[in-house]
Image (cartoon, rainbow, N blue to C red; front, side, top):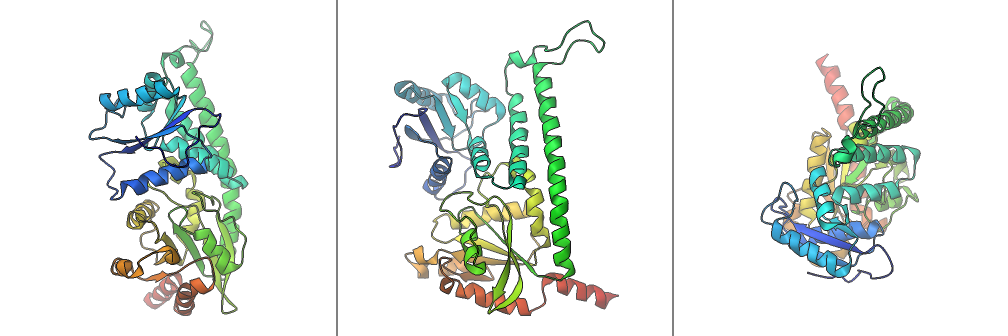
Length: 385
């Protein structure tokens, strides 16, 4: 059992963190995974009483934790009067329900935690709608884990149509109606975005998109390159909304640069689904700039996470530049150079100043003078015709 230095025992709902090293987690640096989880908790502004590091050899289908680990967690909960337990990994609805009953505590898993952060971070109307869809979809899955009381009839018997619908059926129908309503709102917003996109395509404006792991420095790069003031905090998921700004190199506009929501390992699938409308901008990108935090010891695993999501979004054929950021925070640059050569093309930068972004600016200057992938595709079609 460990107590990270930033834990608090102020007056609050007494919370226990369960940091799990599961057998399916292939992360080489498990402490980095735990630190990421602690950053999620910090970003959600949740204070906690204690933190347990738990290594599992097997996953119990009913309770997630094995019997021995369950007993240890319950013992800590009883000793510290814990009212809430936050698990670092994703649980099935039934596992979450069973754990709540067994521990007699409120329970949050990784999905709940990330959704909570997204809900607090959403600012724009589009962002709020997308998070709303994801929250409702998650809430719907949790209905499946509820007890027998939700199976009780809520209607009146003897009327046409037979007995009334169950509470669970009613709640599920209500959620479906709310999701449908939000999706209609999102469609209207998408039409406005499509008009703006069409105008850019007609003017043949090159589009570059920043993608990458959360807190890698995408918004900082956008601000430095475009002299913008997009929120760029040192916390996870500071940016949820896609922001697009004109991009100038040597006083000449070479295109537009867009910032996008950051990714993270075990990112809830329903969040990816909800944000696909925003991430659809990536489909029209001429160049993807994958920003990597080189100071993070787990940076290679983070690249793998981003690649998996890129595959899911069917963007694997897009031209990509690897932008290794925060080079000023790396103690031994020479030691990592051989690893960087596996990712081409790439540049190494420090986004806090325009001077630190010179390698990136130099690449973009050369790239903008060569035919873009979309332009080259048009030329190839013309030649074939």
